[in-house]
Image 1 (cartoon, rainbow, N blue to C red):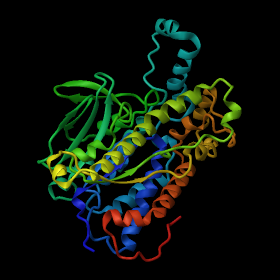
Image 2 (image 1 turned 135 degrees about the vertical axis):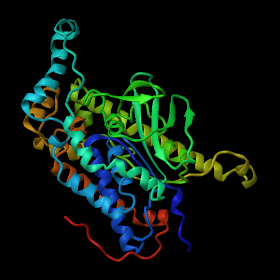
Image 3 (image 1 turned 30 degrees about the vertical axis):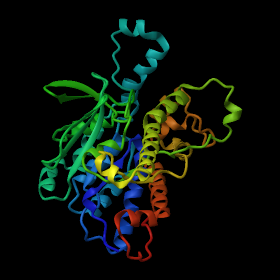
Image 4 (image 1 turned 60 degrees about the horizontal axis):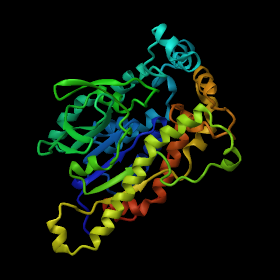
Length: 408
């Protein structure tokens, strides 16, 4: 069978803070599977790369190494295998008290007293260390030449404007690509900077908003998963006709064990915050995937002549998402959080008991610790291999793969 053209393939890496470790495991499995099928010399399998929130960091790192996909994946894997929270946010007691305690002050003494005391906390945590990590992990200065040499067609990073309420996809890519405008969302050509990555990954309340220039003025942006009604759209606007989507949560999660027993208890702040973040990071993707599949099914019912006259085109989707609840995984690793962060989260209702997963959803976004990230990477790797036939068909890697094993 002829190989599928890869210039129309796109990759979407979604958000979710530390949950993005899962997608690194998926990428590692794809790289291994590609080598096992003898397709490692076919160039970058993802000419169109889009990312949101923490997924934007991985997307940018992958794009900036698009001339050597395998090496780029190995470098990203090394970072996530050896992660610590101190690489992302200040986790010492003084820093956590200086930022997080101010939020708790607002909860305990009220806005009026806080205003009188001129308390103006910008975020729960200080993510200054992330600046240094990005400088080493994402060599953005390489991107223009990689685009010019044809190793990648486009990199797109999404962020949400607190100033205007609109959802913006910043893209850097080939000259023929055009901006787009839709209801409350649009794409704009821009040179991607570290500030775009920090803005896209600024989890609301947890990390500070970032100022970015837009159309001649400055707006403040936060996490790109907020108000993101069509996560897959960016890749399609940039020319993708086949999109690999890597999620950060189960597409249709079952109820938590014992949910019926705790239903009559008032939820803790941690439960409410975790529920809110899950709504921001997970729900829109599931809805968009369902919508895309419904459109694809509808198009198959339309005569070919009518299809050619329509601007709609079928989009091949391959979705890889966690086969386990990541908050349950997080519950086993809460004790690995820095003491100051664990104490602060404990005040919100996050328990360090592995059996108590009610508040673990909040922790699952902040657990940038190697024990947790490695377990998520292993899960992503296993889930991707469980869909190895679909992956091979997606890329046109029809040669039977040789046996291989993941390095520990």
